[in-house]
Image: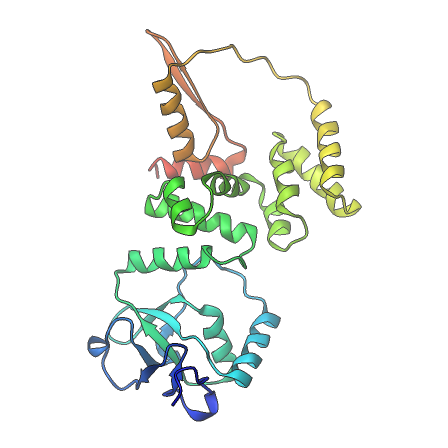
Amino acid sequence: MAANKKLRLGRGLDGLINNGTSAHHAERTIQDKQEGEVYELLLECIIPNEKQARKNFDPTSIRELANSIQREGLLQPIVVCPLDDKRFSIVAGERRFRAMQLLGTEKTLARIIYANERDCAIISLIENLQRESLNPVEEATGFVQLANEYGFTQEQIAQRVGKARATIANSMRLLNLETEILSHLALGKITVGHAKILLSIDDSSLRIQLLEKILSGDLNIRQTERQANILKSSKPAAMPVTPRELSESLMKIEKQIAQQLAANVSLYHSSTYGKIIIEYKGEQELLRIVQSMGIE
């Protein structure tokens, strides 16, 4: 058979896929399966990875994918990692897995990789974060998960997902917003641009007030900025901060702390006294910072 021949459900799952690799039948034990090889696996033995970044699956999109698989065949196997003697965890391809379930098939093609549970979770997170189809809240949650649960620095996350470190930091800051705002952001009712403007407002009640204006007035970014400036100018002016001078080494420490905590940090230092000020907006951000410091 030609190496580029499409795999079609109606002809069984033992055809050739993409690179011409033959699919092995499912009767072999997990211990016998070779890493990187493609096998037929029972859908009932495959478990979605709860650590993956994507949390929302659009039913219409899954139906469209199922229709495509029914017409064209499964062109790319899902990727799984063994959990035990009988179960596999999805590393990549949960949308394809859900589409196959919708079609009522018993088996699917899967490529197996061997890694411990932690590494499988990290691989799954990064694989999803490299895609462009996550909503901003899912993406931010994935970055924070890599930082807080697996100890990645923002620079390491940036390297693994192929984005700028500043992009990672700005994304993570979105989770400082109230749940109500994040819900509208995840649903696409407001944009990341709107969310960044809302972040510039310190007062939670004013942020919600501006959110309502955005939604009711269908405000664009420029209009939102104008409304934000009006709200901020209506607040009493804050007390000025005393100027401070830091050496290059202390500035580097201040920057490292800020990056590690994904928060605004100010370091004050003298020969006899010093303090570190960590800014946060709301209880949710405080809990995130505390967790990132390893405090339960």
